[in-house]
Every structure is written in C-alpha cells, then in structure tokens.
Length: 99
Image 1 (cartoon, rainbow, N blue to C red):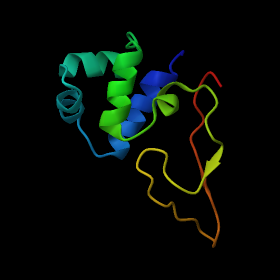
Image 2: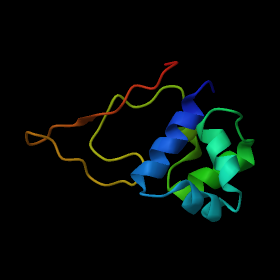
Image 3: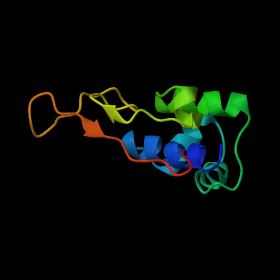
C-alpha cells in the first residue's frame, strides 16, 4: 500500500473536520494508533481498514486503492458536490505518491 493508506486516512479525517482524538474515539482506539497510521509507521489489517472507512464515511477501497480517480464532481470523503469556476467544471484530486 506504500503511503497511500496513511495519506488518504489523514486527508479523509481532515475533510470530515475531525481531530485525531475524534477519529480514535469513533474507531475505538487510541490517538497514538491513529497518529502511527497517519505517519505511515504501520498499516492496520483489513478489519481496521474497514473500521476507519466506516468511521470516515468512505469506502475501504478509497483508503487503499493505488489508482485514484483523476477528476471528480463530488468529494470522495463526504459526497458533497464540488464547485468549479465554470459550470460543469470538475475538481482535480491530489495526486498520491506511488501512483
């Protein structure tokens, strides 16, 4: 998974407006564990990935998939419609290293 999981975990947490403490409480773990995952120190197993995905309102595939969508009209974290400068414009998603 390289750094995909840690990058997307942190991005999804921030997009939801959650602190590390908030996410840890939602998942039922310690803040140190969340910080360790976000810093790429280790990666949880599939059940942990599912727990984080559920707590963040994203799919497990979003957290671990190596090929992100290049353009989107809705936020992958919350489903909110993204606004563009022109009607019908889409939002360029950040490029994830390792892709």
